[in-house]
Image 1 (cartoon, rainbow, N blue to C red):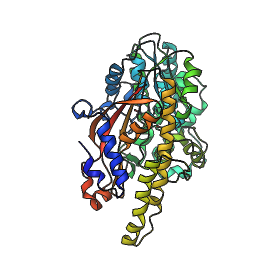
Image 2: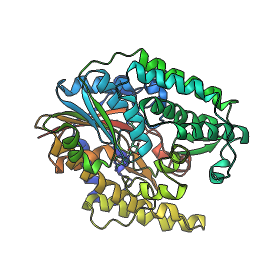
Image 3: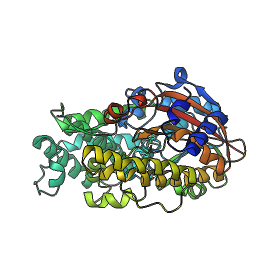
Image 4: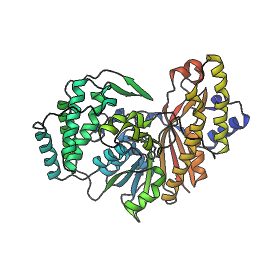
Length: 443
Ligand SMILES: C[S@@+](CC[C@H](N)C(=O)[O-])C[C@H]1O[C@@H](n2cnc3c(N)ncnc32)[C@H](O)[C@@H]1O
């Protein structure tokens, strides 16, 4: 899937030659057969541990198994995911006997990851079972009207049931048994709501759950069963930590001082305007990770700038700045055509500048934490704005080279999607964007 034709849609000869040279320079291979079905979450739906929480932006556990093998990481080395999400990398590494560390700026993700790779004793599991049994005797909640902002996303009866579960969880002592029930509660919120995560956005869709309490019980039992039936290889430890990927080296040192990092495997946010915090706001508020929807804004500030509304980026790589400028240049023409100001797209160029500056910083952290010859794998989709393809895979490889990596391979795994509006306006984009795995090797 060579992309040279697509670069013709950039006016600047300099950008066209730059992108063409990257495409020529890096080993780009077609790996659809091996990876097409592993770079998304669907293969995880009915797999122990991964099935606890439907994390749409996740990748398949099987992919991690492949990449661990490919990386040549040794069992005494640790495996790191600086954007752990639902903890796929960490769960598989841990089950395979590697110690592992995951970071995420979404405290819900850090909690979820940590709960998956925690060691549970049979006492912890008994406690969780007892908590679930005793819930039947928990008194009915007096409706205080505190969550009126969230009420609109649920059927009234289900919302009252969910608040009842939540009040019960709040009353439990902090322990691993409580964590299991909390994961179950977080996991059922989306299904119980009329608000569904959908591709790059959210969609209104009535729930088909009739009884949230029954569903909560089933989910808790599923989690307990997975833990009971898994015998992790002893000796491996795992942590899901609420922190930014910018602190990767510091966190590795804090948790595994002196131990070498065997591989870093992650899928960062894509520069596609997706807002993780809007997407997970029900879980963040009802899971007590924030006190109100307003507090979510503070969390968003710590995230990679992959969404619109970021502050203006002052310093940026000149080629990336040029790509952003080309997009910037076309916006007034589109506005003239439609007669409407497009405030959202106007923010895209700064998002791109911010995104790649942030990712460069994270890649520098990855390089710093790895010894020569060790590998980083990045699972990423390209994006497109105003008919211009932003080749995130090539650009991350290029930035990786700047901070101490050489590019091992760019494995093209699938065709990536763009919005229907873009396809209507720019039909040449059809089947042109790709999702890849970028392999970087520390020099
Ligand atoms: C594509 S998801 C990762 C999914 C993960 N691979 C899985 O299988 O579940 C990207 C994650 O990056 C997190 N994130 C965004 N900015 C971050 C930052 N600065 N540091 C750490 N995590 C961040 C988001 O909260 C999100 O969970």
